Length: 98
Length: 389
Ligand code: SF4
Ligand code: SF4
Image (cartoon, rainbow over all chains, first blue to last red; front, side):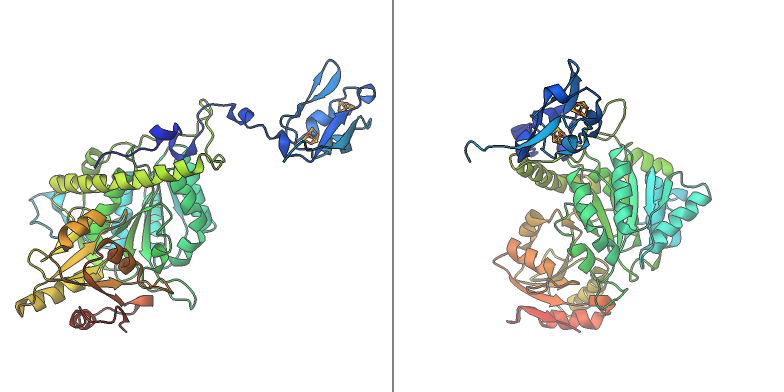
């Protein structure tokens, strides 16, 4: 019987092993959220607390302000709750189309 | 199985040994790096023996005393993912409890080998033999071998590692023996030397392994656009296993003078048979005795022993069953609401044959020669499924 191997068709590994780092970046999960965080620039003092609390690692300090990557933000609002300066407010996303 | 007359010398020395101990001895020769141990009747002797061998310095494996069978399989998965050979053994409720992890082991393509002392499932609680536990895991993606005696169990463990670890297979194997009936039976077993096994079974070389130097992700999420490909891969690997099982059986036979049919099935006096008994495990030996007796009376009857239930020997059965008019399938399990699980598959493979199904031996109920004889009397009867008590 001829050897069968559907890996050839699909280009995927046996056992779903991912052999190179960074592939999760391709999976942009930001659209999952219902709310999105909005930074009030003037209130942010770049303390970095939100950076530490964000479970998705979406926030970095850039140019002395928090910078939120909406590509991966799930809208959990933890950053907004934890920010001592109340510099992050949550806004409901408006769905353009379904 | 026919044991050819032994060659001279220590190599073929037979040792009077319990089947569970034979399995432990064979496992030790395969040198698994990790053995997960958890007791459950009637399997316990196997892991107990390995732990004893470890304490005597005969086994170098890391022995992990886990807290459940779910953990036993998890420990094997974790260790195997790190790129080493592993072993565990279980029965009945233990198999049921580790069910979740069985699917994960095969889905992650980890060639773990597990010995199973087949036992009935609760309720009502029962510690004796039938095939309910492993039949319920039919679709778990594990290769399943059913052994007839201690020698076959000993040999099958060694073969199972070789088969499972082939690059185009990479699937786990269950080596099943009938609980008590076989697991606790003392038999003379021809033992192999470490050099024998080392020359037959190559060092395990995994496809991927967890290594902090070269990080990989295992057990990742698969979306609808890939999940089906992974399942197809598993199925392809299972089908590839058919030829590898045959090849391995043949190679083992040439090396050590013991061969089990073509590896997938084994037949007895089937060449001119008009009728056949199809069975798995220790009951095959009883069937051989009954067949001999009936043959003396002129009845053309033979035995087809299913050695590999997964992958299923579809082609092998089609090839030999053409001439056979009537078949009796002996099932030691019941797929409640339908019939015996072996019968269901045989019927699908041989739609033109007249096949009767006999449900016997559940929960350790003895399958005597008389029972087999009464089954043979009913071959060809109208009633398709019959329970024989
Ligand atoms: S916690 Fe608030 S103030 Fe601190 S960096 Fe984040 S947004 Fe700015
Ligand atoms: S809403 Fe949640 S996920 Fe998004 S940036 Fe804030 S903490 Fe991170």
